[in-house]
Length: 169
Image 1 (tube, rainbow, N blue to C red):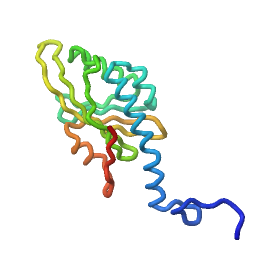
Image 2 (image 1 turned 180 degrees about the horizontal axis):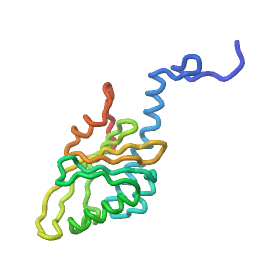
Image 3 (image 1 turned 90 degrees about the horizontal axis):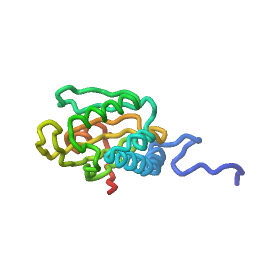
């Protein structure tokens, strides 16, 4: 009987096998869901400081490809500019009107479908908005937010073959 550290199951020669790496991923990813949930709830109520506290300084937000002028906003200052722009377009945009349908755990990515009833600032017309954010977390910080129109579009864009999405709501 040898003396020394016991290697975790699924390791060979001290190197983690794919199964062990997947097990580690599933232990860490619920933390990613909570990071994203807290951050998105802060965004919904317009608390940009709390929202951005979960972001890496070099974070980026990419608007949906079918927007009239799709853009990528870089860094926390860029995201603040984005928030100001959408606040100009939508009256009450940050009045906690977003309803998050789910937080889908895909490991480093968390997919967040949401709905809201918004009112155009200029027109006063109310519209129902359905959108999905795909949020990437690295080392406990959000590094990327991409907008998609549907849950499936986001999952297809960021999911990996063989992944089984886990939902948390």
